[in-house]
Length: 615
Image (cartoon, rainbow, N blue to C red; front, top):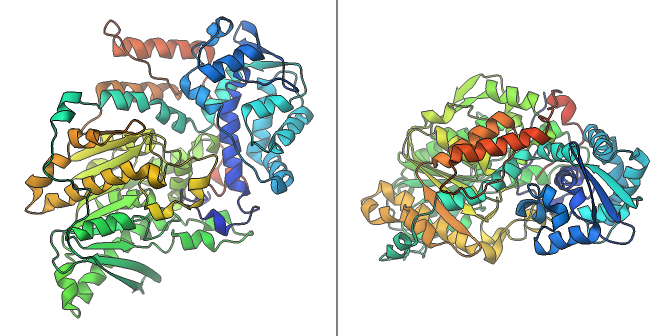
């Protein structure tokens, strides 16, 4: 079984050659084409494109014109000829049509060759031939090649424009099955957005009644000092860089920040400075085995199994414990450190893989047996980047493992990578107050499997915060706006000035959270409320907070567990029960779809060349 081969979202693209970046692009073209296949019959352009589309859906057949389909794409209105397929013509699928994948022209040849010669590329070609009856490998290769050469990027319309048939026949049921297998967790998570926005909302009058006496997102009055150290762990042979933020008048717990994979200790620098300006000492550490330096040092000949060793899932929590030990030891020689860094009372805040780190330190028990089972039985084409990332830990020899540090009294996990790392019950062992943050458009660690399901396991005091419209990188420091992920055409990230409402909420929530371990807990308690969080919503970003998930959402997840199919949420009328709504939807899906067949190949065979360097 292979180690992880998927970097987190902060991949330093600028440090990689085009050839090194190919595996990342493989994953994205699969995703783009996979979603597009499901609706090939729903978009086209004149010219070389198919003038007509013959859609087959089970025993039904329907010929539609390009103009009718383009009308739907442009206006969202479903013409009479397409009413038969109205259940498929959702806003989510319409949005997919606007997506484009850009491939540098100079690497088209090598990109396509490696794509089609990979195991997953061959699988995709076989499935495409089923979805387009009568198509040949040569026709599909030619259409893909011409599509990749287009200046405006790969899209559904571009593929149709390049396909050499006047009438294109599409087996819609096969196409939908393919789409479901390609990153289904992300599609399912995005379908949840309207559920979360509606079910977690409080009444507008409650929000209007929330009139705070001050704004916790504003900077404090204290002057922040900063110092950098490199701490040497001789036993584990790891040098751990840390940035210390503190003031002359320190109060409350020590805050520890843990970054995600291929990031660094400055990923949440704005938050460190904000908390320090209010009197809290902050330690932001860099995990040497999974920092940006790790990925930047890779060469063209790197072995994917070395990108993220399994031991990193153990070393990350141990890095934090070691830093706490060292700060306590140094305090014996530097008295001012002992006064400013209260290592016996700690709040850990982590993002992405750092979110996993925080939860492991909080008491979550790793269930590696269940993780191995998941990684062996699921096709990689149905996974998000975080699904792959977690599978690095599958090589660890343990069955179950705890990395709890009793000094950690609180935890915040922003967009955490969780999945199956803690199994079905491991997070129930977390007894300290825990906040999990989720973003509805997180394509790296989709909310359904990496935040929503894990949140239900938590047994102690817990908070679930979701930012509907935000992405994986939205919480980052504005200084990271030039990160390669922010410019990706296939994983669009909301960052920079557009994400300021997210950072404002992060600053206010985090300050209120940390203050719960101080004498000012009561003063800051109102900011850990649904009213405060929702009051920061904008027309583009809906913010929600809850202590438990609504029944409707839990029922939705149960249906998905049984069917492995993403469902699209619809408004439930008063006359229609939630159970009847989902039961009817489930019945309709079963009538037109066969359950997706999952690959049972070993990870070592799956993760060879393709999908080996996901961001």
